[in-house]
Length: 205
DNA sequence: CCATAGATTGACT
DNA sequence: GTCAATCTATGGA
Image 1 (tube, protein in one colour):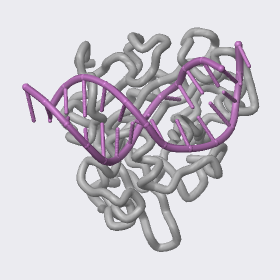
Image 2 (cartoon, helix red, strand yellow):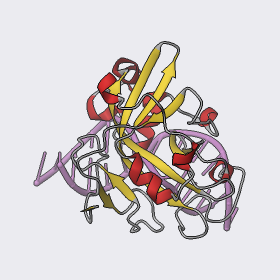
Image 3 (spheres, chains in turn brown, orange, yellow):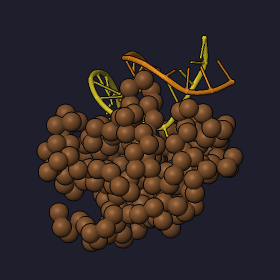
């Protein structure tokens, strides 16, 4: 586990208080860590997507303005935005940009690096099925709506710097209708945990 | 490997 | 009423 944590210090407020696209790209290779008492579960992020506020991105949940559901997108950077989708799944985002400006990075996939047993138990599956999709990662860590608004900078869930991947690739976004072509998906093309489906129109950064 | 259908709830038009 | 930033099972190549 020590090799997975080049730094002892987690990502701080300033990391998230930046343009969403920069944060998204920099998150690839970082380590998402959940502490539950003495137990630690950790996933190396291998795939994320950016969703921009400010009316620039029709696919962003904040595109039509602030509502009860999307309020966290406008909140303090470094907090967690969790939403419920398709009647049964949850997805988690890291909120970016200064407070008052919407923007977030959807955490789409990760490679387990610690606490595999508990993640396997939560998922009821092993291998890539543990965490090769946004709702699968939430399921593996037990993230649900109760986590909406939690602070990644201080709480039991946080993100640590990791070893940057040899390569970061970029593509259109997955699973959305509006603005799917915007190249706001960043992933490690060498990871077997990247979510299945379209990998077309990808290119290296 | 790929393609498709069904699940199931709440936010919003 | 519509539809969603998805997953799973199933069936076929």
